Length: 380
Image (cartoon, rainbow, N blue to C red):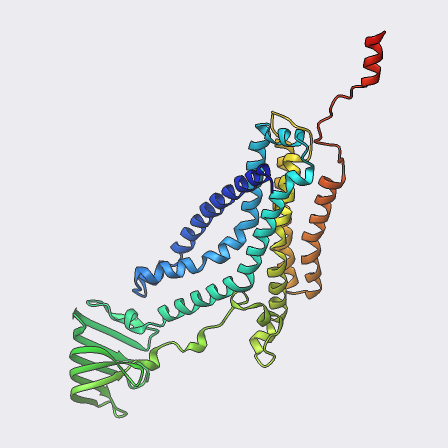
């Protein structure tokens, strides 16, 4: 690239980074607010909270990148064009393609990055986030152990501890409602959370177990030490169901035919797969719209608000059309072809309008001097 093209490239790139960064921070903040229950209800650490929020960044960036690229391109081109820098470049002999090529190259780079996020980074991050959230919600110890409070686990287990000193709980009460007809109440002087054969277990010391038998007689048992298994109260890993956004591309195309739930959502998976491959094309569409909005007509110091307005409407329209097509293709697989035709048609039409129509626009006409006529006139 020439110095002028390099200048245009980095001007737009700088704006893209600023806009994507700003919008992503706002989106992550909004997403983070919806995850505060992990700290309030499941008593997870701040590190776990921020880790889960950051895992949502790839999907947010992929959603915002095309629109941010359009805004950055329009803003940068409009500022450069109003400062007559584009006119100077054209006067120096640069063609329309040479002026637009830095932005097209940036759009292609963004499209490749977008495709990489869609195919590999997003499903990897989404899986890690879903597994971390499931693990946090299934952390029975963190959910139950709240000194000075009665806590409940789905109506099956009620737990109370008077206080916690280091890793030891004191003044423990457990109400086991697994058998609703014969519940068991356990009182213990102290308890500690340990693992036995890889299973979470409470080691109760100086414990007393009370239970009503079939004859409604109270049965009391005393133990110096008693192991209370918590594994049956924890959520099973099978509860973790991967959504379409969590699957890799080959998993979306080749669903498990023996899995009823995947077979039921096969059309939705196919729509998601096509969407992941077509949405990166929107980056090129957005840049072409920005180029047309600013460079698609004659130079004007008053700006190009009308063309920018039309281009903005077109950008929002193509984004909405793409989202609607993906949603409708989930129930009608025949519409998947439209997910490809929409961006490709927009690219072809905008390329023809800018590069094919009115090739003379933007060129500076130079005065023609007839040297022979001028010499003859001088001689006469």
